[in-house]
Image (cartoon, rainbow over all chains, first blue to last red; front, side, top):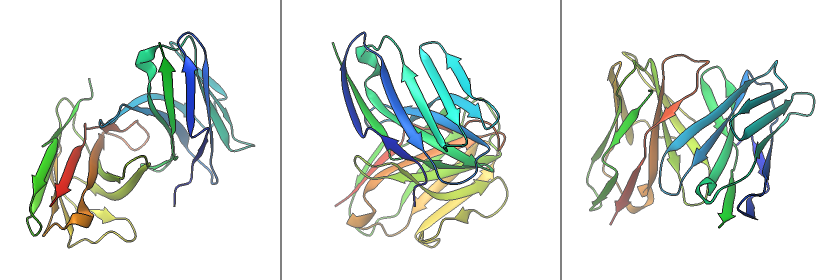
Length: 109
Length: 115
C-alpha cells in the first residue's frame, strides 16, 4: 500500500499565487523526495530532503520536513502556468521509493 | 545530466502478444533500475527492482513469469510483458539510479494498450 498521503488531491490557483502541498507518511525514512509529473510523461526529480534536515530551498521551491509529525510540505512561490502538473512525494527506505497519491496542481493564466 | 531514455513511448497490440520495453541510462551507469506501473490519475506502483547482473526483486502480487525483467548491463534494463491481455494495459515507467541514496531518474514512460 502507498505510504504517503498527500493533500490536497487537487489544487487550482491563479498565476502568481503560491501553492502549498502536504505529504504525510507512516514509517521511518532515510529521506523524502518530491517529484513532478506532466501529463503522460515520466517523473522529474525536484528536491530531496534528508531526515536530519528541516527545510530546503531550490529556486521557487521550498520543502519542509517534520519527522516528529511524519509530514512534509512543498511550497511553490510565484506560480506559473507551466507549473501545472501532478506533484508526488516519495519516501525512501534503502533504495526503494514509495510514492504518495499526488496532488494535481492547475495554475490558471 | 542523468538522462533516462525509455522506448517505445506507445504500444498498441493485440491480445496474446509479448511486448518488450527498454530503459536506458544515457549518461550514467545505473546500478539499480526500477519498473513502475501507473493507472490513470493514480500514483506509481513499484513492480520490481533490478540490479545489474542479478535477478530482479518483484513486489508482492507482481507475476514474475508475466513481467520478465532483464538488467544485463549498467545502462540497459528491459521489461517484457508476456502474452499481454487487456488488463495489462497501463502506463509503465522505468527509473534508474547509480546509488541507493541518490534520486531516481525517470524515463518518459510507455503507454501500453492491449486490444
